[in-house]
Each structure stands twice: as structure tokens, then as C-alpha cells.
Image (cartoon, rainbow, N blue to C red; front, side, top):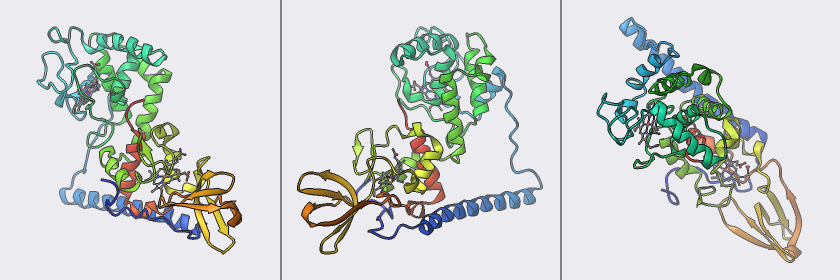
Length: 345
Ligand code: HEC
Ligand code: HEC
């Protein structure tokens, strides 16, 4: 999916003047798209409403009780498509979350306590029972139940798109399965749970992008310069841990690369005695020559004796600033949530 792939428009501006107006142009363009998309939805909503004379959609607030969570579990949350609860339901793709036969001797409210101990040992942080429950929904890849695949849905991304309150209610429902109900632990979360709640909120704020589609956007637009978990290119920084930097940083890094220039990836402008100019990252520097790696990946070796002038340009990034033009608003939201929700530690 890489290499010759699709319209990536990532062709970097070869030495082109990277001025503020270009940047703001790109940003304005993205916002323009966003407005257009919003306007379209509002318009569609309006026409549907006036046609049927009713409200287009009714979503009531979630009740912060196990019963509220039960409704989500067997409804909007689609948990029942993979999980059964004791004798209720018939799904087997995920573990039964109730008590069921020898394999599931304890319901999830009790089972979670043992899992929490395992997580504490593995991570060195102290997991309370509820922290495991929160983690299993917020970051299912962190602990994969033996005998199952890492294929639990990200339930706060499309198509399920639960919001934080709905997830909190579901947690209460899980907790009430054999365990002691502790609403306070959900409303005043521990550090571990809070971290996950923040992540869910960030994902929602990112426009509810679809991480699956974002993986494709990433392969089309980013993989030629970045690596994830050891795969890709090392021209730009490795992005495996980028979700830790948060939504705002990530958005800036994509829309305005120069605003967040990463240390060690400064852009050099080299002018040789014959007037030739080369722009890129300095990837080698020894006694007699340097290497400049251009945004295309091409490496140019320049003898130090030939250099007339060499300087860093803080207003330039090797990362193209016009990516937002190559991507649609949906692409942008999708790649944001893909990176924010990268699974695992
Ligand atoms: C697409 C199928 C799928 C959907 C939808 C799904 N899950 Fe899961 N879930 C799994 C699988 C598979 C596992 C086991 C692998 C793992 O641990 O990640 C799992 C694991 C879990 C666990 C850990 C169980 C244990 O024994 O420790 C919990 C808790 C859980 N899911 C809750 C939920 C809730 C709540 C929902 C709905 C909001 C949900 N799941 C939706 C597939 C799914
Ligand atoms: C032509 C190469 C190139 C392409 C294509 C590219 N990047 Fe970059 N990227 C870089 C370089 C070089 C840096 C370091 C300089 C900087 O911070 O601007 C960087 C920095 C970043 C950072 C900041 C990383 C950190 O640790 O500070 C993020 C996030 C990022 N890129 C995301 C993306 C995403 C998402 C895409 C695809 C939509 C993408 N990049 C496409 C070259 C590229």
C-alpha cells in the first residue's frame, strides 16, 4: 500500500518559499472544508426534518447506573454482538462476561480483580479492579484475554461511537456483575482510569474519526517518512508513541509542521560555492563532508570545502505543510484518530 500508492500529494515543495501565507492558506482551506461539511449536514438535517415534520434524531442522556449501562451493552454499544452475559445472548467471539460453565467460573465484576493484579505486576502501577474494566474498554489491546484475538472493537470510534458517559455507565454495568458497585470510582476516577477517560474524550473531540480508515490514509500519506513499531521510513521521527502527546500537538504537527519542529529534525539550507542550494535534514557530518537528506529521501553528499553557507531554517520543515490539501477533512480526522488510538503500550 505504500510506494507507488495513491494520490498522496506529499510531493514536498522543493526549496519552495515556505511562508506564513502558505501555511495559513492550508489551515483556512481545512476550516473551509470543515464548514462546508458541517453546512451540508445541517442542510440535510433540515430537509429531512421538514420533510417528516419530526425531529431527525433523538438521543437521550445516559443514566449513570448499571441499568443505564445495560441498555448500552445490549443496544448502541453492540457489546452483545461479541459478548454473552452468562446465559443471556449467544455471541462467542469475545469472552462471556457473566458466569458460564468452567471456562467462565466468575462473572466479570469479580474476574476483573484478578486481571487487575496481573496488570499491576506487568506495569508496576497499581490497578484497582475498576481500572482494569476501564482499560479493557478504552485500550483493549493492552491486555488480550488468553484464547482470544486482539479484535475487540474500539467502541468510542465509528461505527459504534459511544461517548464517555455511555462508557462510564457500561463500566458500572460490568462492575455490577458479581462485583461491588462503586459509582464514586467512576465519577472520581483514579489516575489510571482518568488517563483512559481523557483518551476517550480526545478521540471524540477529534471529530470521531475512523481509525481503520485512518490506517489507510497513513499508508498513503505518511509512511514514506515515518515509522510505526519498526515499520516505515526513518526520515521523520518514529510515531509509535505519538498518542501520548495529545490531540492538540498532533493536529498542529500535521497542519503546521513548523510550529512543532522536532529537535534533531531541523531543516538545513546549504548553498555551495557554485550557487547550488540544497535543503533537507543533516543526516551525516564528518571532517570532510556532510549528507543532506531531502524530503524525497534523496541523499546529497556535499564536500565541506564546497560549502559557501549553511544555516538552519526554523520556518521550514521537511514535512510538507500542504498535506491538509492532499487530504479531505475526513482523511484528516481519520488519521488523527488512527494515531491517537494506536493500540498497546
Ligand atoms: C467486535 C467484537 C467485540 C465488541 C463489539 C466488543 N468486544 Fe469486548 N472483547 C472482544 C474480544 C475478542 C475480547 C478478548 C480480547 C481482549 O481481551 O481484548 C474482548 C474483551 C473484553 C473484556 C475483557 C474480558 C475479560 O475477561 O477480561 C471486556 C470487559 C469487554 N471486552 C467489554 C466490552 C464491552 C463493554 C463492549 C461494548 C461497549 C465490548 N466489549 C464490545 C470483542 C468485542
Ligand atoms: C516528506 C516527509 C514527511 C511526510 C510525507 C510526513 N512527515 Fe511528518 N514529519 C517529517 C519530518 C522530517 C518531521 C520532523 C520535523 C517536524 O517536526 O516538522 C515530521 C514530524 C511529524 C510529527 C511530529 C513528531 C514528533 O515526535 O515531534 C508528526 C506527529 C507527524 N510528522 C505526522 C505526520 C503525519 C500524520 C503524516 C501524514 C499525514 C506525515 N507526518 C507526513 C516528515 C514527513
